[in-house]
Length: 195
Image 1 (cartoon, rainbow, N blue to C red):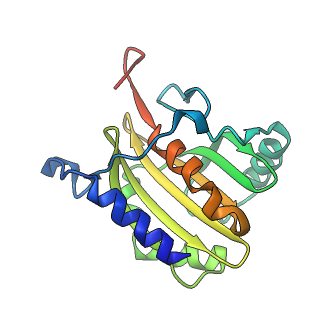
Image 2 (cartoon, rainbow, N blue to C red):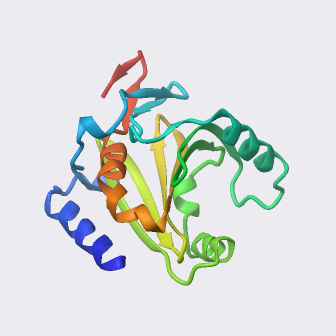
């Protein structure tokens, strides 16, 4: 599975340009976005838009269950406010705001160790890149049952998390949907216009 991931990252990097030094090592990456695989863009938290794989649906029951769990979780590494959730039988996608100043500086080795412990995984791949002008820190890891991608984004001086959890059995078949979804993220400029 990691061989496929390395190939994908290599392909992304081969399509990328180095951006200005004020972007702090966030390399611009152009994702292959297939509009036939994703929804129309959805505005989230009046800060950004993104599209979701057209094989998932907005799931209010799962949203309420996760939101109640998060409200009762006193062990959360960062304060988190759930914004939306989409799913099907094999994919869970949730979006939230991280209510933490200077989040990127706190995404360090301590956080990686906390992720390993929480998800009971031995290794985590980390990357930093820029999608459509949005800086992103990405963590990817898997176990026998699932593959997880966590994206942390800085948009309009707010920090957001988008988490994709996929059943391991459909991971390879779902990559084109996930890539199209990630590549659709765009900041909403103040004044309501997309970048």
